[in-house]
Length: 335
Ligand code: NAD
Ligand code: DAU
Image (cartoon, rainbow, N blue to C red; front, side):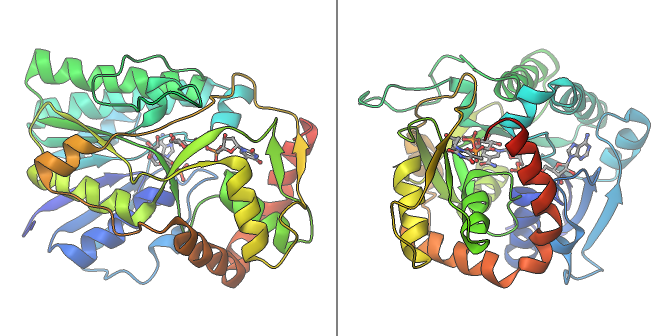
């Protein structure tokens, strides 16, 4: 395990990054600096209660080289989560996605190149486009890149930058591409927390289009254990896909949420579909499991979902202030 190591976690005040910071504190002796711009998606609350002698927050932008370069110099490794992360937002306004996901990653790569610091790049399965519902194949590290949305294209571009910096400059980097995460602290703009909070508010969950689209769900804690494993044992220059065999249609997930919350499983509505909506994602994480011996701990999706429902029921004070504006933006698009 990592001892006496200083790790810079970009985007560490967001949903998955904050889970990773807690995971590092629990499972290593590393000291952690979070670099986060605190956009609408961040929450300081997600970092509350962590030991002050091990975790500090620097509020700033990853595109700011004058901030990033000296900070990177003071660390042994960078784990890069910071991104604009929501597909629907990227359809409304792609500009911050290009800035943060492309220019931000470029800025970090230049800093780790100059400082000779280890880099782990956190990316998404969406770089591989989508699969047909009946396709027996799943995504692997060899699947060609065919991103569909401004978000996924910006992530795909960032992955290409990392590979080029490894090959051309010898940067010590690894990449992971993970499937859809769920768990506590996920912004209520995203599918699962949006539907849970709609049900809490006595409204009906909203399925884009037919609801037959499939996502491959993984608990955010399993994502964190996989990233730590790759940081510690991954081969430099390699890409690892992270997934927990959690394929479910959106319709199945909505029915599960309604049932868990004591409502009629058919009490949902169909709304305007997402433009360019990817049909199905599915991850083959065989390389990570075989090469690095990683296994997910949250094998039972329904149990993980029940815990997540309970978390949103108990943490209304956190999400309530975001709910009105989030729903108003969706309503304006018929979603
Ligand atoms: P999120 O939107 O919840 O959090 C992103 C964080 O990055 C926020 O705290 C935000 O303030 C910060 N940030 C944004 N722009 C920044 C900038 N310019 N400088 C500094 N900080 C900035 O996102 P998430 O869902 O936690 O995703 C984290 C990472 O994991 C992203 O890179 C995303 O592409 C990747 N990923 C997400 C999923 C998923 O299911 N959510 C799956 C696979 C990979
Ligand atoms: O696959 C990994 C990706 O998963 C990450 O890279 C992204 O950062 C993350 O946001 C997520 O992208 P998706 O677009 O799959 O997630 P989202 O939660 O937006 O939507 C999940 C599915 O649910 C998708 O098929 C769209 C659908 N949906 C979404 C919302 C918000 C609905 O049917 N209704 C909704 O209200």
